[in-house]
Length: 133
Image 1 (cartoon, rainbow, N blue to C red):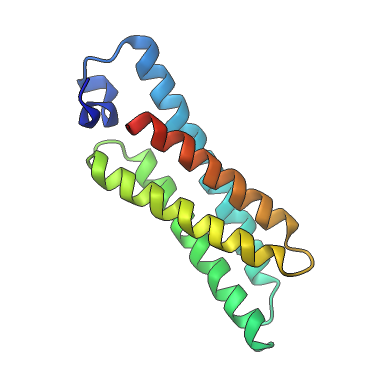
Image 2 (tube, helix red, strand yellow; image 1 turned 120 degrees about the horizontal axis):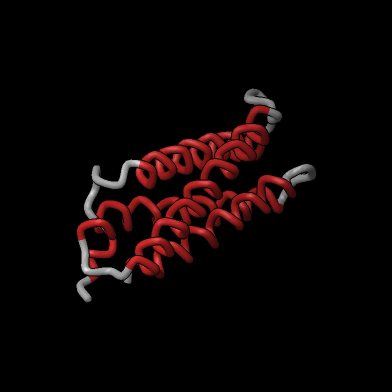
C-alpha cells in the first residue's frame, strides 16, 4: 500500500477498519493538540512579560507552542487541505515544539500541567505519524 494513500482513507484502498483507525488516530492527535494549546496558553499568560529574561523566553515559547498546536489541530481537521507530506511536516513540527516546551516547563514551578499536556501531545503526534508510514 502506498503511503500517500493513507492521508485520505476515503479515496484509498484501505479497509473500513484501517480507515476508522486512521481517523481515530487523527482525531486523538487533534484533541491532544487542542489540550496542549490550552495548557500552554494558560501557562504563558501566567508569566510576567516584563519579568526576568528566562521568564520572558519561557512565555514566548509557551505562546509559540500554543500557536503551533492550534495550527496542527486545524490541519488535522481539514483532511483535504494538505497532502500527506504537508500533514507530516506540520505534525512533526508540533511534536518538536511540544517536547521543547515541556523541557522549559520542567524548569519552573507550576509548569507541571503544561509539561504533561505537551508530552501527551508529542506522544499523540508520534502515534499519528506512525499511521503515515
